[in-house]
Length: 48
Image (tube, rainbow, N blue to C red):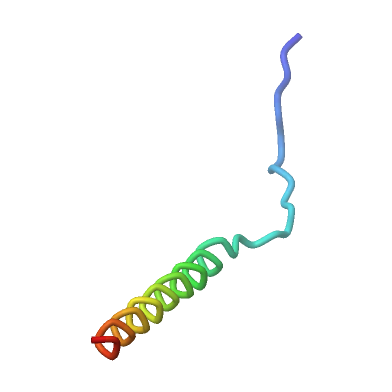
């Protein structure tokens, strides 16, 4: 038995927001790391 597909695949209607979510998440991680580094550096200079 041979199947001959016709037409197009079904669309789910969902757009991929993964790149936007990944960019926002990465930016938040980098910003948090920068703040922690700055606070640590600030505390070490005031303690001496």
